[in-house]
Length: 329
Image 1 (tube, rainbow, N blue to C red):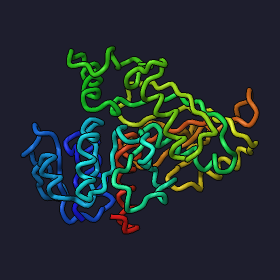
Image 2: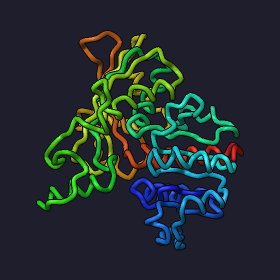
Image 3: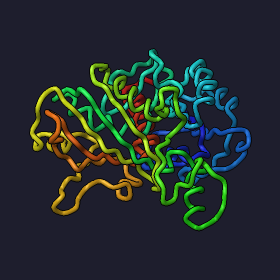
Image 4: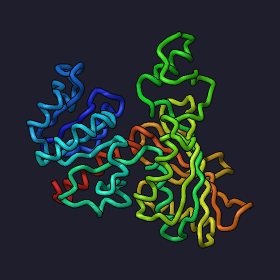
């Protein structure tokens, strides 16, 4: 198994290496790939130093799998080059997600769709992954009509520059800005760039990606995405209207029995999901489950997950594990 990690020096790349190590993914040869300015840099993995190489050298090596976390423009240019030499690409950017011939995969939900002919596989948006993990089992039983989601997203979703901005502001240091405004002691209703319809790209990802993952366009999602001054973990307030009525006990039971979900839902003991507890973990945490008393068949819940792990690195590695286990590479 020859595996290439493209974007190995970035924030998600570092977490990918950690997850590959933790899950003991079978690697005979590891290629750490980054932009020209990082070529030659050494990164340690499982006690061995690996020199960072460039994209051309990585393509020439014909890896079995290439996990990309290097941004959309890099993916658009280089993923097809890897695919052309027989490599299966798992791409963490938004470049391929909504392409009709590319599959958008959350392993617990739709990995069974993958075949040997899928050479570019899209990893969904971090906020989408935690949302659909909780919605998928409920949709199966009660059929969703409409989802309203408000996100509270960590600065780590923007990258190292944003984390540094927050740390600088907390320390009273003037420095480089990732955002148009301070993030410390603030909330920015502005994740990604604004589209002509007034929504941000992040909000439109949340509207479109769940329909593709669940292969169902009969429900709708509307979103407001907000950046808050937390360092790791995205939170979502979710309101779901179903076609069928439900019992709250059944909702809790379904979520409790869903692989990858941890239920934290006991107001009596102040038990509910928070990013500080989700940080560094792979589960999606769900709590604050209650009926919306203003609408029939409607549920409110709170969903939290580490955006760099299940929201990015872990999901990508799980896709790779599925490919290996099912002899698709």
